[in-house]
Image (cartoon, rainbow, N blue to C red; front, side):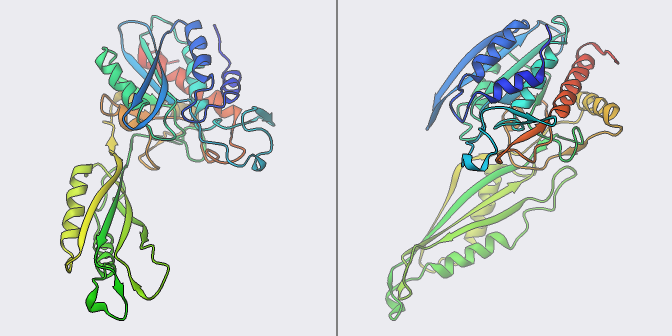
Length: 384
């Protein structure tokens, strides 16, 4: 059975699967995957302070090498539809370009991989797919719990590909072998409110807050590694909530985010932050530091023969190997990396999350060819 990736992508775009509503996208994939021999399991996770999420796990083959493909069917909201040339959930093809929400991020990656699987013999090895509908928002009841469920039920893998947009300018010019972590925090300094004319009867928290802001932002965390840039802390807001000029406020807060490399963990970062805060004289104020949300851990996949095989396939197509990148924000690959080596390999994504999101259909065909050629070599060593 042959699957046309452009047709599958168009049908996936037509599913308005804004997180966490799968809107028929997983139903569609279930039918397509079962038609090419996959056993499909639907899993719904909920709790932990987040909304319920539908997920899909599919597997085909027994024994041999085990390959995992992971991705997400959920998309960000389209925003003001007046900014779109046409309905964001009605796929539109113009001059070899397909438009629609999710075209780049990342229904195209899923369509390409499913189409590639249709060309791989069922006896080649074990292929698994872990598809969530919760990557663009909380990411609590999606891939994190899905790969944990896989491990608990004996579904290990030797190598994993996430189909996120990884290319920068042209298809295959970059693959991601790791990602920086993300750590957000808040510091609240509380003093004593009072009249500015009687400062001796108050305790202004703002000089202390300003000193903490300087302490956090003035010292470099590190100088980077072979594969990562230097970790970076950015202050994102300082808030007092004081609308007048004659009152010393009672408290103020600052928020910050750190994008960090694999020399740090959330725990060591928290210790560094506490030490920087402790270097500031509190001057009788009360200082509280809180971690905001759940930090995303940095990861770097071990470089090995499977990444080399993928790189060789791309090099033969493009005339040069891809750059190994760790740039960008976070992705669900951070959850998969806890269980095995993972890379991100997908399309060019500058239009993702924008109005009139789109990809070139030629790139979709090319990505399908890359996945197919990689799997042939990964499973059976076929040089063709």
